[in-house]
Image 1 (cartoon, one colour):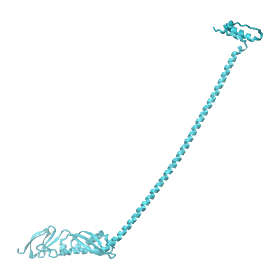
Image 2 (cartoon, helix red, strand yellow):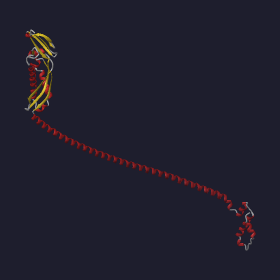
Image 3 (tube, helix red, strand yellow):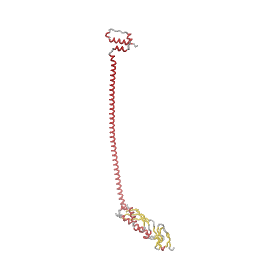
Length: 335
C-alpha cells in the first residue's frame, strides 16, 4: 500500500537494503518493510553450491578426452560479490538478472583453463589415469585466481567423477589392455610352471640329498658297527688270552703243587721206609723161630703147625710119616 512492501529472507541469504543508493540495512535472515520506489534489495546466497561440469580436451597425442566433475564453492564476502555481479531481487524475492549463471560460468572457465594446461602435456593413457592430478590442478588454479579472490568466493573442493575417451579409442585401449593382460596371464602361467618345475627340481634335489645323507649315515653306522665288532673281538681276544694266561698260571701252580706234593709224599715215604727199615732191621737177622717165640701166641695148633713146617723142610730126610685122623680133626676143628 502506497509503495510500502515487506520482504523476508532465510538465514542463508545475506541481504543489502539500498535506499537512494546507500546501504541502510544489511545482514543474514533479515525481515523488514521498505519503500519500493526508493529502495533496492540485494540478496546474496551464502550456502555452498555444487557446480557440475564436463570438459572435452585434447591430449598430447591428439586424442579427445571427456572430463566430468563438480566444483563446490560458497560466497564468503557478500560486499565483494555484490560489487561485481547483480543479485538484485524484486518484490517477490526473485532475481531480476541471472548473474548466478555468470558466476558459475566464470568458475567453470577458470577450471577448464587449469585442466587444459595440464591435459595438453600428457598422453591419453596418462590422462585417463590422472583424475586425482586433474582435481589438484583445478583446485590450485581456482584458489590462486585473482578473479575468484576478487569476488569473495571460497573453493570448498573439486571432484573429478570420470575421465573418458571416445568409444572407438576406449575399445582400442581395451583391446590393447586385454592383449597385455592376456600376455601377462601367459607370462604368469609360464612363470608358475617354471616355478613348479623349479620347486620340483628342488624337491628332487632335496630327496637326493636326503638319500645321500641317509646312505652316508648308514655307511658311518656300518663302519661304526664294524669298528665296534672289531673292538669287541679284540676285547674278547684279550679276555681269552687273559683267561688262557690265568689257566696256564693256575695249571703251573697246580703242577708246582703236585710236584711239591709228590716230592713231599716221596720224602715222607722214604722217611717211613727208612723208619720201617730201621725198625725191622734188628728182626731181619733173627731166626723166625725166635720171632715166633717172641710173639707170645703159643698154642697147641701153632706148635703142631710149626712141627709140620719143620717136617716139610726136612721131608727129604723122612722116610715114612703117619698122621692119625684124630690129630688132623683136632687141628681142623675150631675151638
